[in-house]
Length: 289
Figure: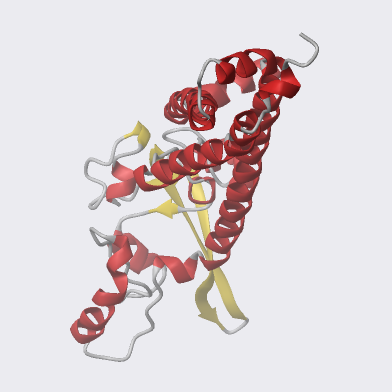
């Protein structure tokens, strides 16, 4: 409930535990046309047993709060009610179907499972957040790998542009290179000149790309809202992407790895043009001068 209490958009949770009001998601309220103070009727198939069979249980609850946690799946399908009222509604006096445990470090759940089983003192079924969202995380991992391949191809294309640009530079400056050679410049000196030129292009491009990427990452939600306003429709429909906004978090290790890859590829891209400039024969270059 702490996740919900920190994302209340309308109403309040004061006295929620002792009242009969419920909290619903913003998208559920929009889909059902409900506002704060309206009554929502809940229907449970596990109703009262009568001579004619089991009748569904129906009861109306006043909407005390409307929340928006950012996950469309939660905002459109979950109703929170006081625990005692839920036990009464589902005929589970003194019992609960599920107990959810929140931990400080979600990546450390494997170490906590034996402790939970020991505390329960009975056989229980444990399902962690990774198992519950296994399909979703598998899809994210596939998308992550594809995006890495796409970014790698983009960097390779940029490296090819460096190669072609330096090759054209060597061709255009062949006369100047030949003069430097006749004045005593060694092949190593020519090689270093073009290596430094290509490396400078790679460093400047990488720095510009990192700065632009950081700005976009920190303002991705504002950018989405701007293009949504520009297009006149909502981009990244929450019903399809399960998100009401685009979250963004910078990973320092991934950022550093991408920067290093870009710098290494840009440096490697300068080797062939620099080698070609270093082996240029000044006699051939100045033959018709």
